[in-house]
Amino acid sequence: MSKKLINCDLGECLTPNPDGIVMSLIDMANIACGGHAGDDESMVNTIKLAKENNATIGVHPSYNDQANFGRMSHDLNTDELFDLIYSQVLHFQTLCHDNDAALKYVKPHGALYHDMMEKPEVLDAIIRAIQAVDKNLDLVVQAGNEDYFKNFGNNHNGGFLHEVFADRAYKGIEMLDRGEKGAVLDSADAIIEQYQRFLSEKSFKIDTICFHSDNLASVEALQRLKHA
Image 1 (cartoon, rainbow, N blue to C red):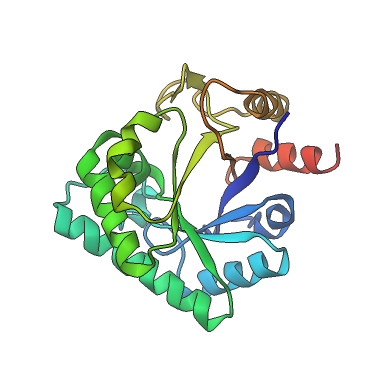
Image 2: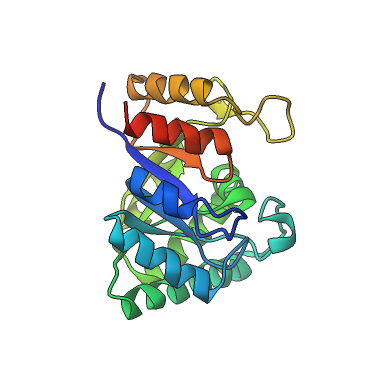
């Protein structure tokens, strides 16, 4: 089985807060930057926690919609999308610099992530915003759709990190919609089994596997994998 980096969405101001437990169990921290969750205090605290645990730091931008946790799509034009991503990523990068930390990648959250995968104009706006902040930042995208990104390669100096989800149910290479029954795996055994299956996947490119910190079964799975 080949090594895949583990990433997790953190800094989401959850109660109880799983970040202290999870950060030592992962390779990459996707830190909420105010769109769906978080504020300057939570961002700085999570950046420092990632540094302490040698986790690679990523920013997790979203539609500005904390009421819906960023899981509702918004109809923005390309200029509005650019401004949305640029402002969140730039502000987060500034906080990283202020705390002697390095921002390495961008992973959109929730509805913005899904819109990026379905609407080329959204992906283009995200890439342009990333390039305007730092041309070397990687972009985390959903695995299994490599052809979709070929037309954007010349516009993106950073790389694409292809991602699957250990704790989301799939039909083929597509995740089930969160509204469907069984879309979120709630058993640590099932999550570990799917994680191990993705480690052996060879039919499409996988760079990183996501576990969600707001899923208690995922946190348990991470702990068990760490001590296996």
